[in-house]
Image (cartoon, rainbow, N blue to C red; front, side, top):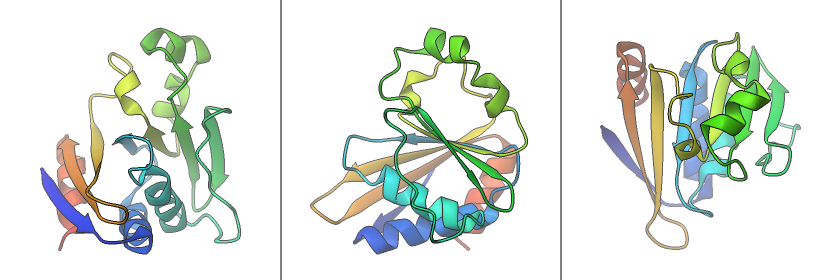
Length: 153
C-alpha cells in the first residue's frame, strides 16, 4: 500500500489526473471513503487523465448510478451508494462494464463483494480536515502494483 497527502481539491484532482493518464481499457478502480472525502474530485481528475474533454462536467452519479464519459476510451463512473450489494449489481448487469473495453471507476465500492473483479485498484480517502486528504492506494494484481508504482515515480 502507498499513500499520499493532498492539501486541497486541486491537488486531489491532479492526483486523479495522473492516475487517469496511466489507466488502460479494462482497468477497474474501486473508491472508498465517507461523503465529502474527495472521491468525486478525484474522479474528475481521472476523467481528465483518460481524455474526457475539460468542458464536460463530471459529477457523482448518485441518482443515475452510472455516468459514461468518452475520452481516449470510455470511462464508466459508478456510484453504488444507493445499492444494497451484489444482488442489485448483478440484476443491473454491471458486470458487462466491469470487464468491458473502458475504465471502471466505482464510488462506494464497499457495496461490491463477489462482483468485485479479482484484479483491481483500491483507493481509500480519509478526510484529515476541511482541505487535507490522505489517499491510500492498495493493489490487487501485478498490473495495478506497476501502475501505482509508476504513479509515485
